[in-house]
Image (cartoon, rainbow, N blue to C red):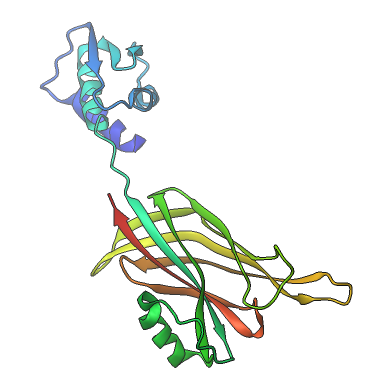
Length: 248
């Protein structure tokens, strides 16, 4: 960026359209609120021939120096003083699905997950699938997001003992794909801690597991992010499914 504007400055100063006519002073209005950033860039580019850049208030910069240099810097300000790019809001639906080697007809899967589960049945050898928990999370493009929760385990456990989870990602952003927008997650992670039994002392035994990855999700599609085993015994698995869409 600095090299680009340095080249622009040299070109503008050298052009015959700008005649050196002694020092001048020009007040330039900053229209889009980035006075500090623009001032910093200009200070980096300022030559040592008497050019002075100062701020009169939050909306104006004062340029003082040779006429041709002031005109060149005014042109650079026009290139820098543009409205900020609007950041998209992303809505994420996350589903934690428990797969088991045992048949279970008492916990039907929600209708919106049936196509995903149908695919999983063709790939995995589990006999039943049930929804452990789900949540909706909103985050702004370029920012991080997180959500925590807890849910009752399917097997008996001491009162107050629940499965706990924490979901987070470092950054979400929206990119154009070949056929649809892609929602990109950097360092997406799900950590889960579940009770798996009670030892001889009457203490709860816990099993921790996690799913950790970078992932691209086509907008509006439900995507299996990963699976981890052991939250309800060795013959079970936790499967994370998410979908994402851009919202106003």
